[in-house]
Length: 147
Image (cartoon, rainbow, N blue to C red):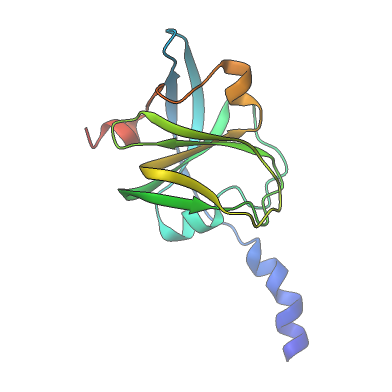
């Protein structure tokens, strides 16, 4: 019986979790606008799964985590294959911090340091390539519905 559960665990870990999608725009302080199609992680199950086990993601794709309330957020990359940039965003849609090039499979804690309501995950290198910095604005239906 124990062997059955040990063999079944990897399959359970990769079970399908469904995500809705929305359009999201990052507006930089210099006036540039970058469009993304992002999956929405706004339930505990979705936030726990995130981008785990994904082997690829389009350059204009990402995932936005909605934590429901503003709070200090801690994340990690365990079971995440893709290197990612993480944007920590407050309830008004302002980028408060960025973790660039989060290391795949790492169990190191990635801390927002300040209270945020959202975390946006993009492919690693996107923020550097596009010049996205703290203070830039993120606009999407999920963010603006609370404003």
